[in-house]
Amino acid sequence: METIAVYWEETIRTYGIQVEKNLCWVQADILLPKVDAMGQLLAELGEDGTKPRLILGHQFEAGHLRISMVFQEKFKKQLVQFTTRPAVEDVSSSLVIDCPVEMLYFHGPHFGDRYGIADMAATALKNKGIRFMAMGCSAASVHLVFPENVGDRAKKALGSVFNTP
Amino acid sequence: MQKLEGSRVKASERERMIDTLRANGIKLSLEMTLITIRASSSESDPNARFLKLMGENRINLPFLCDAARDAITSGTYCMLSEDIPRAERIIAGDKTLAPNLEYLPSVGSISVFPHNFSLAFIGGVLRLMGESGAPLYGLATSISALTMITDFSRLGPTVDYFARHMSLPGNHSPFSPELHIKSM
Image 1 (cartoon, rainbow over the protein chains, first blue to last red):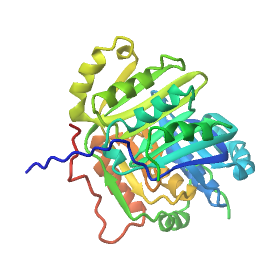
Image 2 (image 1 turned 90 degrees about the vertical axis):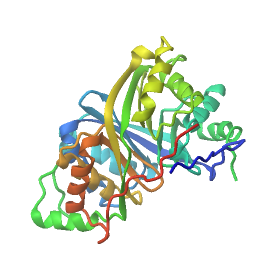
Image 3 (image 1 turned 90 degrees about the horizontal axis):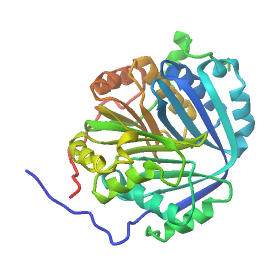
Image 4 (image 1 turned 180 degrees about the horizontal axis):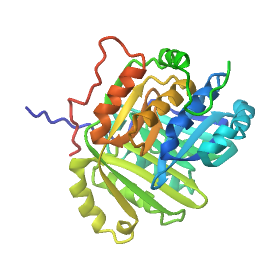
């Protein structure tokens, strides 16, 4: 049996657009066979309470995974110590920390099953001349990472095309 | 606590890790195709063009990771495999976009939830993913789940490996979508 339903909104509804500031952006390049080792090292980093706000990863070239992570700036000391651990240097060919950055995120109904959400966000930002450092969409969540002092402008740009409570 | 180096983990420590890796569930996707776009960051960014074309033609991208570094923008996208023939026709009509795309057919996603923004949990799951031997093409956290992209044929074996090394509810069974939403 096939049931046809249409999910249509005049303006796409979100559950609210949030901006977080004073964040650190960490990018680590690793060889795919070292994913288990990097996972273990990240787990160890997390044991002292260091928590990420976002983790993204993609193959930037064949056989190489780039893991991008956002943390609150209060964890900067732990992150710097982490990047200088010999075990981390062994599994990562490149490690970059960029502070401060800002992150914007929003969620919405059935976003994971609907087309055009990411394009609407990217177009709204482009129309205002705002460039993002990263975008991640999975399940019903959309995350965007920006340089410092851009988050509020981005929120305003997205607020003009998305419905917020 | 004594720090562990890489994946050299003692048996007693592994038991503790299994206890740490508590999840409420695992969700699997339908079969998808992974599309990668790499280009220099510029006004005519093909990643933005790709998003525009897919949106205009009502093609959903259940997974998206787009990141820039060293003036190179790299985008990784997943779409249902059934949408690929239509997407290919659309892309073929855009001469600036087509040369920048690479396709990897037959991938799927494993979503483990909730991650509770715990790096111990997320790192532990990544360790299991690497140990399972499944290739990792992409990952992203949402508000609650950690989603990882791998070969579609590896979803079952990877979940079996996770089930042996994580703490899941006793009656747990990974669920796949029974409701298929098709954009019209």
